[in-house]
Image 1: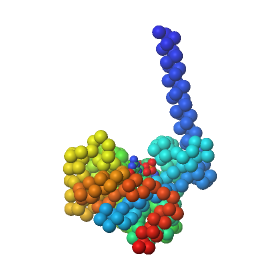
Image 2 (image 1 turned 60 degrees about the horizontal axis):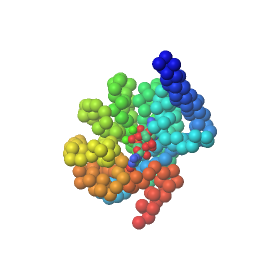
Image 3 (image 1 turned 90 degrees about the horizontal axis):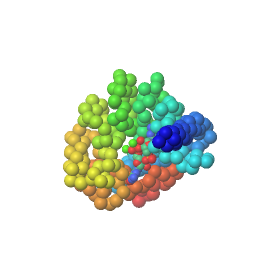
Image 4 (image 1 turned 45 degrees about the horizontal axis):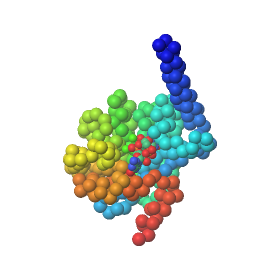
Length: 275
Ligand code: C2E
Ligand code: CA
Ligand code: CA
Ligand code: CA
């Protein structure tokens, strides 16, 4: 039993070390990835469910690693957050996204995801305004997507950040709505223009009468409070019809398009505007 126990301990040590090594690798390499041009921003259309037209694109970061291949943000964003690299990375993402969006028609906006750490970094609001100015993009064409995790340590810095940028015309969207706690309180306290209903309400084991009723209630609230309600993760025409019937105004998901490189985003827009 003693030997078995020891063997087990060693087994766990090995896996833990391997995970740690990989995290460490990712952390080190992430710092260099920007300079090496391994990161790029992809854009996923957000579509008006009434007209079918593209109203905005969400910027989603991709990392094409020379050895590890394509890494998804779920794998490296948490590492970037823990190590603090997210501040540099986030600034780069915002700048890139703003530059790309400046090429689009004036009525098309860009949505950028923000990590809580980015907001707490000193000069965060200024950094975003600088990125907009350098890109020549009006503040009203930038949307910042934040999740409820931002408010867990409800600091004055967060409130100030949102107030300062809202005053300049930047819009805020509450992302992954329905996956956290007491979201209604946040909607009451902050000037959100948009709510993105999490994809778990659209597909998966928990979809049914209840989830449908919840989406309806959220859409009802959205129309009263003049907030747009986005349904995420739409993969089928049935899902699109269901959320439109429920009162969502915007949709996003593979049914319309995956996230695509900037030149394809531009092509989607010009194709739509030719007709
Ligand atoms: P998110 O903000 O909820 O982004 C939506 C995710 O759902 C994206 O995954 C998108 O590709 C995926 N998705 C879109 N439509 C569908 C669909 O129809 N079906 C399914 N199954 N999935 C769909 P992605 O690009 O892997 O990003 C994952 C998460 O990583 C994002 O979730 C966001 O939290 C984070 N992330 C991505 N880019 C950034 C970034 O630039 N900065 C920060 N801070 N976080 C980012
Ligand atoms: Ca998002
Ligand atoms: Ca989301
Ligand atoms: Ca998310």
